[in-house]
Length: 92
Image (cartoon, rainbow, N blue to C red):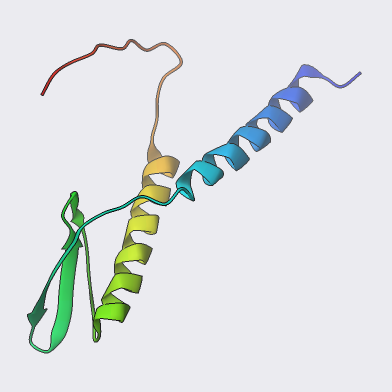
C-alpha cells in the first residue's frame, strides 16, 4: 500500500494537468491596435494590461497571444489561496 504522501503527490500532479488544460481553452478577446512610429501596437480591450507590439498586424497578434499566456501562467504560479477561505457574492 502506498503512503498517503504518494497519493497526495499523484493527486497534485493530476490537478496540475487539469489546470493546464483549462488554460488551453480558447477565449475571445478584442484587440485594440494602432500604428505608432511604424509599429502595430495593441492591447486586449478586456484586459488592458496585456499589451505588445509587432512590425505587422499578424506579428502583433502573435505577440499579444504570448503576452496573455505569460500573464496567465504567472498568475497561476503566484496565486496563493489559503485552505480556509470564505466566499461572498457581490454586484459591481
